[in-house]
Image (tube, rainbow, N blue to C red; front, side, top):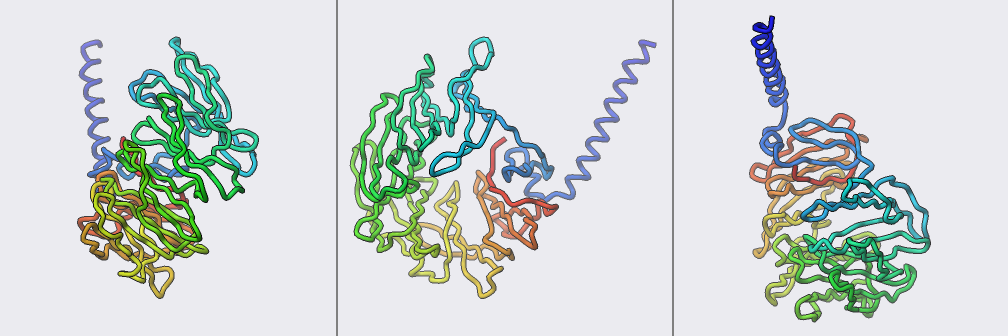
Length: 391
């Protein structure tokens, strides 16, 4: 009997493998080839819906988020998510846990909004939601001691990839005058960069973490400043005669800054400035008046996507704007009942695009080498935020 057991077991394993290969091969034939090729490297995540890898949807969302230190094994875990009503905002907050050497979790603090490790893993930047605003703290990893840095935090943005320095905007939400500060996470020291009519969301680090841009409204005009962290100096990059909402975005190589300004919900100016030399900013709307918006830099090249208007409001024309030449080339036209969502893959070869058609939100990928829509899923897909994740 024992003599027969091993051959029978090997035969069953071989048959199971052949069946699995056949099933997967049949499934793969139904998938867009580009998704098959990239599926082993990237996942396309649409947030609280589905995650796609090799065309298969994985459902379910974890209620636990762990912020690992860059070198481990220390970790901070936020879980038990809940809604906290605070004035004037509503936040999703978490309880923060630490794991000790015995693998046991204990509570450090509650009402945590965000956690950022600094490179030396000795301190952590912690945002804690209070009754009337967000408080910015530094936590000592060895002792779990929390040091209050600011109790009127409106917004903060740490440098990448790990925050040795953090920018934060402080002030009352209903006050015109706000302050922009730079926090040195290693020392806990702060430096005031600017004071004035600051938009708390418009302060952006360059991808290499050596500079950041911010906007101050002065006499009805938006002045974009560029701050060099090493020299500690700011210089004016451009001035636009608009006092509305500004959106800034750096190119991946940190050489270009795209600035969009809008009034009453309509974009009135799009400029792209070089931060490597003193050539004048490119005025996109002056050259292309039909452009509605430009968003999303490629992660691998100075290329951004611009959306053009059409007489049919459900038709959207996507173009690529390439720097430094400023060449605008058509990419693809799509039909959607609202503005399409799109995001680059990490290698810059694909665009993931989500449309709206008759209350459904089909998901596509567009290969840049051969631009056309390749369907990923149109089976009752919900609207969410697209992002690519390495796996």
